[in-house]
Structure formats: structure tokens, C-alpha cells
Image (cartoon, rainbow, N blue to C red; front, side, top):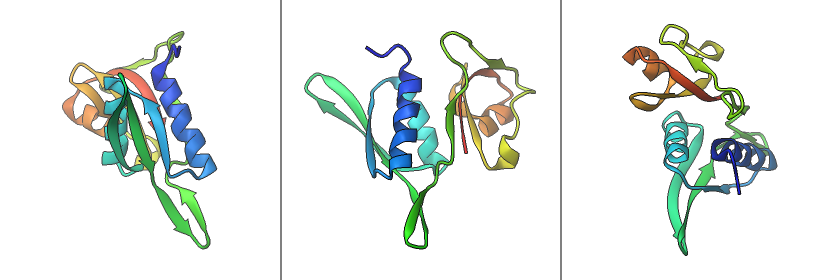
Length: 134
């Protein structure tokens, strides 16, 4: 049993991109689906699809790579869990601004739902900082 499904999903995405895999399978939850949706909107992954196998749901994530000569380089340089079950990290609306000079994204769980940092800043809401991607 997985205690932190967000950390598990982030680790699966990180490991799959390092290994150069095209697709990875994540355990389903609404918050993981919201995170994956943001990753797709921001261009870090190609696509995702929710599938059912028996009585369990999974999210199949198609990872995105850049062509660098003969090699393919993952678009995700780093994806990291920030707020953990043992240490929650919250940021106010003024503390959520740009990350990595606009090249990265922070995913925040707010009262308006799970949002990227730029949208949370625009809406003027803060919340729990789930993860960072660049």
C-alpha cells in the first residue's frame, strides 16, 4: 500500500523519463489526475489516459522527449515533491510567483483546485505546494 500517492506518481514519472520509457502507469486518484492534467497543459508530457483494469483505475502517461541529435532528451529535467505528509509546505498568494525565471512550474493545491503557480498568482490564492517541475 502506498502512503503518499503523489510522491509515488512523481517518482514513477521521474524514473520513466530517466530510463527513456514512452509510457508509464500511475495509480489513479483525483489529485494525481489534476497534476497530470497540468503537466500536459504546460507541455511536460504528451498525453494521459485514465484506464480501468478490473476494479482498479490507472493513469497511463505518455512522456515527452526532445530530439537532441541521435539521442532523445526528456522534457522534464527535474520533478520534485515539495510538501510531504510529514512536513506540509504552504505558501500565501504573495509567495507564489515565478519559478526558475518562468522556465519551471510549481503545482499548488488551493481552495480553487489544483493549479499551476502562475494561475494561482493571477487568481490571488495560496495553498499547499505539491511539487515543482522544470
